[in-house]
Length: 104
Image (cartoon, rainbow, N blue to C red; front, side, top):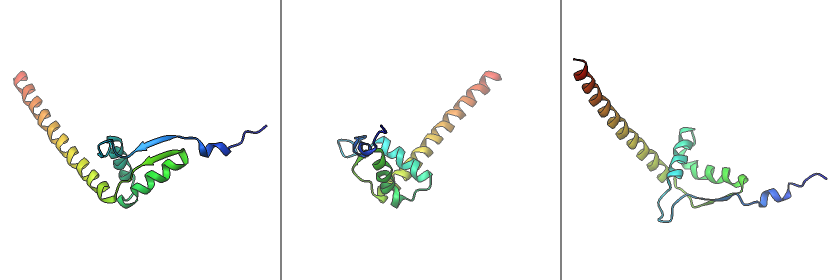
């Protein structure tokens, strides 16, 4: 009468592709790497964590990511954040100047 859990391990949860069809790391992979590093996972362990967490959920991970690529991805993300911040500050200053002219 009780259901068996034997079939649970065999259920297919899908495939997670680390890279797209052109061999470029997907935006989802980049975001996942950023989140794992932000949570304190060392770059050298990110690939193992991705594979280890996916396995019990029945997800097959297609590909690997090296610790060097993890470090580069985090660095690129940091540079992109700095560029975005500088752009936002520039636009905020432009708006501030516009408001000053309107008030005067």
